[in-house]
Image (cartoon, rainbow, N blue to C red; front, side):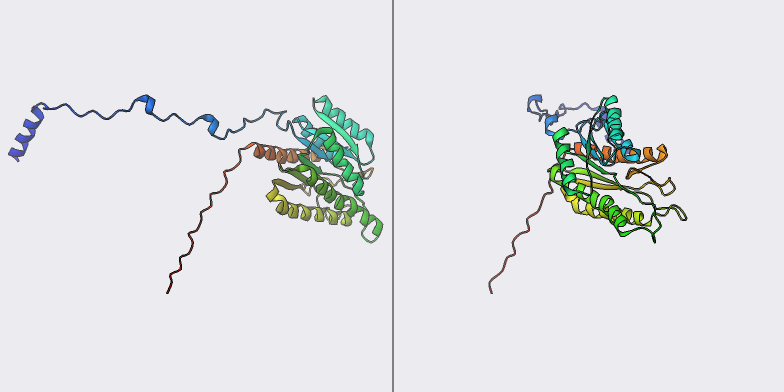
Length: 295
């Protein structure tokens, strides 16, 4: 123990005979430069409120009043160019156009009977002629007949399905011809289920159930093409839509604003996704070929 202690003290007291070997250095010129920012996918900066849909083209059917008008105004307030569709009430459509223009937006009113395929085809053609390729399509137009189920005629039932279901389907079919490889967004606005003991609207409820199932099918079918499909169904405790000039309306304004806010959130989420850099293609591994040994 004493020998070990003495040896240790001598080692500490004796100076080093040779200087320590310096660590190898590398000239700065030979260091690899940091990756250029241009080589990295640049994330788009968030747009300020009022410009979050700038450059987008939106078509809103049944946009003369209620939820449709509120959606059109909300899109226009965020910079989208809006096509205001109407069936009969041109004055109401022009008021919505004027409201959007007063906010600094762009809007254009187009009449069309959604029960007529040629009208729907013209609606999409005029949309593209006015503002370019559509990005957002909102199916809000619908009609409603408050008739007890034992009294409603077959012609009235056919009319309900012709506009509420087939009309929306025609708009989707024509919109797909104009979306292009960039994809797009489709929103279907469905009415809530009638409350027990409320206004008789069973036939109308059947059309809304069909619209909801159509939305689910389209969402699966079109997902691979970059097309997002959503349905907005207001809470069942909100007031039922009121009939006016054959177009669906929402009362009071609180219900319309709720639908518009939800539609705007869907549109903004889609716009944010579109501005993200594309994901890299998955790398596929090639399996080695099987080797067969000869007998």
